[in-house]
Amino acid sequence: MAKPTVLIQLDADPQPSTFDGVVAVDAGVAQLFRHGGVTPDEVRSLVHGAMFTRGAGDMKRTAIFIGGSDVAAGEQLLAAVTSSFFGPLRVSVMLDANGANTTAAAAVLVAARHVGIATADAVVLGATGPVGRRVVRLLAGAGARVRAVSRSAERAAAVVESLGDRFPRAALTAHGVEDRDALAECLRGANVLVAAGAAGVELIDRATWSAADQLQVAIDLNAVPPLGIEGVDVSDDAEYRDGKICYGALGVGGVKMHIHKAAIRRLFESNDHVLDAEQILVLGSDLGL
Image (cartoon, rainbow, N blue to C red):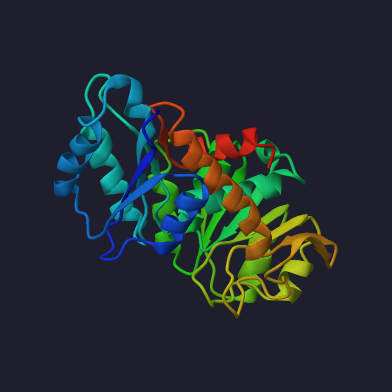
């Protein structure tokens, strides 16, 4: 009899995410071990416990999921997990703290249904947040020209600078935007708009985005009113509004959930997957989403 699949969920938050636990079960995980308040110093013993309990043939039936609300803390946990591996002794691991990787991948994939991402001119509002940073990163990696927008020019510049080494040839620009006129100017020539700001914060009014004559796709990733893009409904799924193709958070959420579950299942195909933003985007693309 084959040994059951085991997913070890590591969260930096005191209480592990219920959302991530439910998705893991729905994805078919047989046993879910949830650890909260995990620090990088505690990771090695948890990883070695996962590796040393099963032989080489069964190691792919154990995997690690890194969740929690703090993406920076999640990145530290991922680094600690991968540094605990040696030789063939490893298990697959996925990072999706705050849902940032799966949500960003879903946003890029729904935009790609309507425009060629490699030649897109995209504006990302809330680009300094956990999801916004991932959206900028994935768009830039796919070849798009990306304008990273924040109310703080310094924070937007920090996002662009942080991606400079990863994408030295990317057309990335930082924009500090505080009023409607500046937003309208930032949208000039753009064909994709993604709002990835904090919940309950309107980032752009309807008059401004509807007047952007080259804009084709508007994607709002905020599900809590007031929404990030005024005039886009939370359930929009390729809905035409003011001549633009609009997606709300629930419209994108269906794609996000497909990706999330598929990524969990992918972890158990081998013992050497490391699923970060780019790998999750490729997985979603392979699914034809």
